[in-house]
Image (cartoon, rainbow, N blue to C red):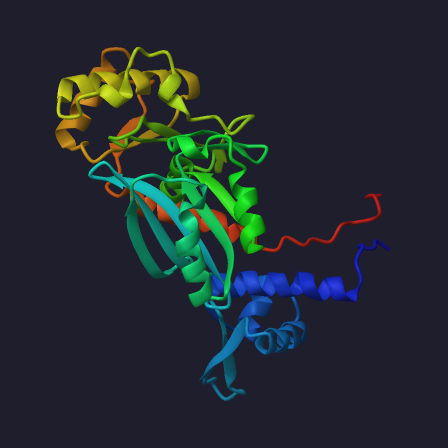
Length: 345
């Protein structure tokens, strides 16, 4: 007889996680429905639901009438049981802006605000975090989306020079005693884009997202086989120092020819390195005329069979917010599993 390691308390916790995950996907479900999708008995599901109701992770909803049988209660996943705080930066009229959003367990934003700063330093985010954690005491994790990379806990490159060399995540994790996620802004955007377009994107596809802020150099997010690719030291996508002969911070973004030539050079390099299925571009200056010129310029070098789909996304903030919300909410997901202690015979 095969045995699984773990006692009855662990079994209950594993089963609770299974039920919560499936109820979150369904939002509302009866005991019978949860039994069907989890493979657990209706008795086990009913018992665990009562415990989850006591813990306020689940609540009873309406009663569903049945054809001659006993009416069934529907149960709801409590999306407001915990929240995450999402913080990211962008630029507007050459000023840095900080955006803060409180997101529930369904990934829905319930509060949003932003403000501008002249300079961003390590402590710049504390006032807004203090305010929102006081208002929403159910915040259980914080996600930061910033232009740069963190390796072994230290920021190794960042558009905000005062943050380079700082142990950013550790600082905020210790200050607020919650899990902290540091995600490169473009990595978060490509996660969000692929999450929102998952029905169109093949599971083994390579997707590249290129973001052009006008105040800083571009950044690239790489999504391969359903996962973000960050490289050995989280440095993948930092394209500003690629030897392409382009001074990104001095480009005239009003010149369609200059911009098209520069972006085409970058795209061609990406294609030869990664062979992506599609490349997504975002920049406030990129309209249909710019896009057509970029594609035409690429065609001078790339033959049709090697040319990926090149398109633009309309809303970087939407892509980013979806991605950083997903990454931060993942910090709250429990991943308990039972391990077989006996080898297969």
